[in-house]
Length: 369
Image (cartoon, rainbow, N blue to C red; front, side):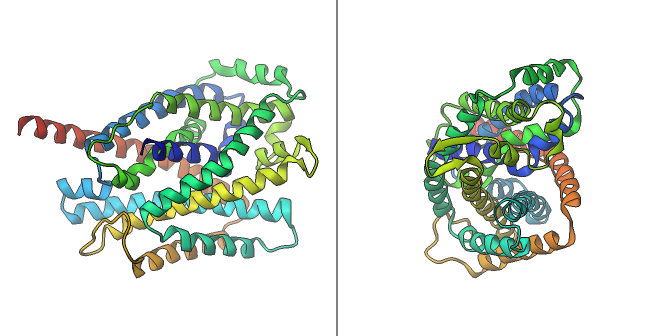
């Protein structure tokens, strides 16, 4: 089951392109982004490894069940509602950003709202499936798409037109002290471990988190590529002119393989699959958090029938996403994303440390019993 841990890590780290992370880092490329990424690599890895320690202490249990062991429901419910909002918001930000991309690069004549309606309609169905089904969907989707994603990243980083002087120029600003906003954006790349708040239910009692050392290396590499490759393509100044910088970067590449020439069409198709998967996973986790607040809640990883509450909760997520997309323009959405990334940093750090303390208590009780 260790592969599902890495599936979540890889999915979230690759989805940083849809969360405006490269844009926020590139905005501060001269004023602290490089040092912020260095600090984020250590801090994000520390949180991830600490969180895996927590999940290893409570095999087969998600965060709602861990909370239920130590606290009454009136304390658990506010915590679970807050956590569910964080996952719902992350998925909503990703899918609305992709709806704008579809409208801008594929078919400008189509309404973005219509595109978003189709996307959330698909996610309503998939997010309501069982946790085991979501894990299997994740495995199939990533095994099909990731080889091509990594191939595009490889082709981009080895492109002969990549300006290494521009990359070295920005890299020299590593001495500038880090800033909180690019630091918060950079740590998002390492947060795939947090999905085990629910997926830990799939792990048997003797489960071991092996190869954890590979997670910091993989996430750091993806973070560096997502920051430095656009600089190499567009230069130190022009790179700050784009909001969807990786879409423009992919449009600067040519594969020359006959029927596939412009990389942007392949890039957007791949990220359509990854965005739908990320939204499905995020809304499923948020749904499970909300369901844990209901009376007589019972965690099930593969129920025989899909509960009606699943459709109700996820449909509410979809409606709220549609309303927010209608109310807020692109600039306001970017500001909301910035605020969410900052809140996520503090909320996630507090959550990991809180559950780490609970894991120490659990281990001490186990040793004394």
